[in-house]
Figure (cartoon, rainbow, N blue to C red):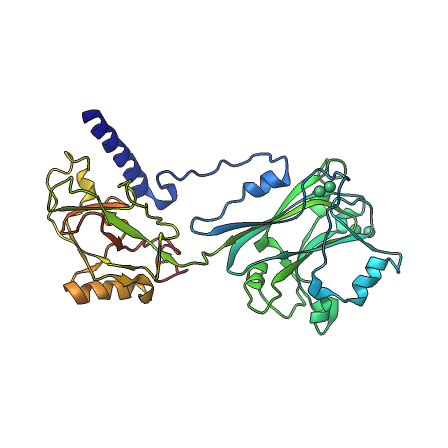
Length: 385
Ligand SMILES: [Ca+2]
Ligand SMILES: [Ca+2]
Ligand SMILES: [Ca+2]
Ligand SMILES: [Ca+2]
């Protein structure tokens, strides 16, 4: 019993210490190792991570198989671009000068034209390609955007085109034999200076009036094994963060111990993207600073640092989505309990947990504020505070 208790205490302290230092190093969340020399586009794409709280999306054209010729990996023109006299001419090779190509297909003077269904609310991302070059690749480029010239009054010259020149990749030692992997951050794509829309590719992706599918092209002497689009998207469902009162009054009948995840009998919190739907009815945890530190915290397995000395009180249950800003939450607390009361913040205790002399029933779950995250609160969403 004693050793169990000591073990629990150590776990508690190490996790809380991590949480206190920074949310970015939160207990139990592992930062992926960097891949120094990724052998494949798939490996390289996997190494691209999204900021915590964002959703990672991968869209893939073709299959990474080292340009193996068996089977087909079709590149598909976005249906909304058809019918299109120019593309039909290319497809029919009537000019004799240029043709379409599929993934893996070698040769020169061929366009790869595909598309990706890209959602909105994109924050960042990258495009990863495995390519095999020829002598004509040094003036080739990849393009993403709305490349349908029929949507623009001045045709090809005004399209919402975002490009990257393949010149440097074409000079890689093995680029013409085994191929080479290239990674281009979406923010680094160059916008067409003649386009009517001014903004980078991320801005373009988040336009309400752009096509739902994004065109992707590679011209015209470069073979493509696979194209992987990695996207980081804002959460599509708003959630806020909660803490729960421990299941028993282990530190004394009048001591509250609210925490993020330390009571393993209850669902943990998520201080990066929230853990409760903003429509859920729960009390708001309000806090007022003070100097009454519960005695005997060490004996209960808690350092004194977990108690800053204040008190926690709860409002009636309410949907946190009705609070537009942190200031609204603070006003709710001061309006109900008086001057000096505000919403409890994630870091008020040791970070992720707080012990106070407060009257909170075991297992109560309540809304808190996480001040340094954009997507962890029902209020002030997408704002750095
Ligand atoms: Ca293949
Ligand atoms: Ca050519
Ligand atoms: Ca070329
Ligand atoms: Ca392939």
